[in-house]
Length: 158
Image (tube, rainbow, N blue to C red; front, side):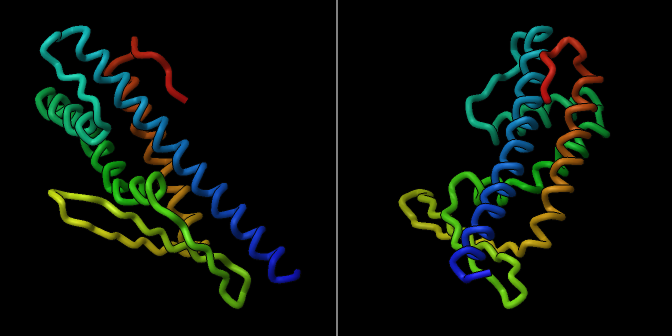
């Protein structure tokens, strides 16, 4: 395969993987939001924060208070992917190919924190990306299932 065609195939594969991971993360975030809505219906003092990280924190607080250890552990497993989420949603990816034709992505994220510039780099190989997607999909499904048990009246999330 000519180099340009191989590069285009690799770029499409990377973007497909990125989209799949973002879809997993989005559905997990929706499940967290639905759970918070359900808890707020029974307790009007329950927070409904705007930012997704704050939503995860609020749900962790509720789960801790309720003694829902399994759901909390599942939530924390998904939170372990926060830096990946940031790279996928806000990062610019550079794609390279190794000599075997497998892609390697270098994500660069620029953030401003208290007027300081922070640059983060995340490097992911194609094989590693496949493992990440499988893990993320499983953790997302576990979280959705656990939250459904706690709040069966919540709107279903795929």
